[in-house]
Amino acid sequence: AQSVTQPDIHITVSEGASLELRCNYSYGATPYLFWYVQSPGQGLQLLLKYFSGDTLVQGIKGFEAEFKRSQSSFNLRKPSVHWSDAAEYFCAVESTSASKIIFGSGTRLSIRP
Amino acid sequence: KAGVTQTPRYLIKTRGQQVTLSCSPISGHRSVSWYQQTPGQGLQFLFEYFSETQRNKGNFPGRFSGRQFSNSRSEMNVSTLELGDSALYLCASSEGTSNTGELFFGEGSRLTVL
Image (cartoon, rainbow over the protein chains, first blue to last red):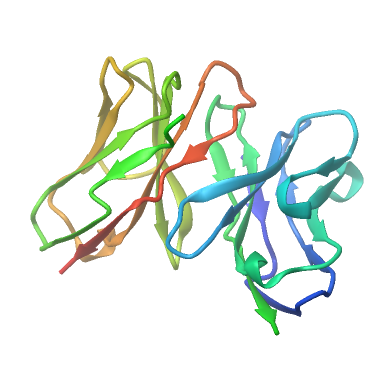
């Protein structure tokens, strides 16, 4: 069965520092992978997605993610975080059943002034 | 284009009652998915409707049900509420015609069961 693991529950980084959020997936074939962000009291918003092709994908708000098949990973990165990036981040994979997206448990990002 | 609209945003119920939550998808989207979000369990898939038919279902008891209308609006119902049903219920819509569709989420309905 497909699954997504986000090993970090909570991460704190200083404003202006670089960020990497980890995501590992379990999937039998080439996965469709997503990163979503949830600000407090809000729904989820798509940051970026990987379907095929270039393994480095660019998203909104300056985020990027790299798909590494050999490591079953899809880590999210940002070179310099802003205070407004404080939120919860979810990695997700689309299951073999159409339109069923499976989410990881999320990583809460806090920004240190 | 208007986003996904969920009503009500907040509600309080007592054990044993039932609740109905509503979701209006983005215009033109035919798929509506429902998720339950709790601190302990994260985002759990409830079900997905496409063109008025349930196309996918998660591992929730039969107390959780849903339906979709011809205008793609969807409702979910939880009967005989339990304390553990307290959660944020998120609705998401998509075009639904491919396996690679992005989900567009509403802001959720926060249910508290006392």
